[in-house]
Image (cartoon, rainbow, N blue to C red; front, side, top):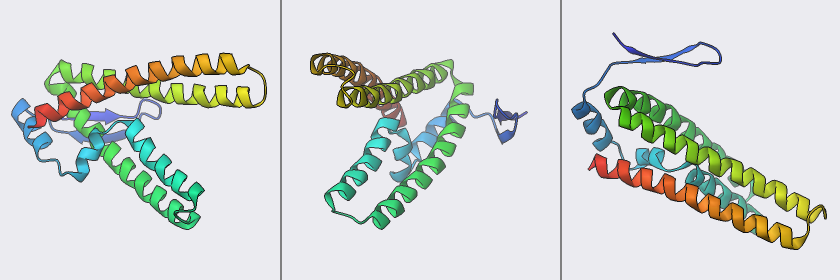
Length: 167
């Protein structure tokens, strides 16, 4: 019997995977190439890489054409790594429920980071349009950044844990 990965929205079969022993999963984790370990980076770190390229465009360090090319390459690589990581997560979840809990904690922290970023952008827009005062803006921004740091620390600790287990 194989483990099936099904898209809950479309009920499309995404893939079938053999069940693996704990030793096989450990072996797979250890065999990840350095470039594939990018998949163990948080979404925030991945987004930061793309944001850095955007800042280089703003400074004139790279052309818009180079920006689009680099961003497209990064996004394609991220999509590929996310597919590989999803398969690996499915395999890990079947081996030990602890890995399922780790994956859920990671997803929750990354979702919180994304939501906080969106909130920060919204607050900045409200401040720029004069809907909130500078004091309120600064206070809320401090609170958001504290929450974001806490979420990033969670992501980092999970990544460290997974890296330690691959050794």
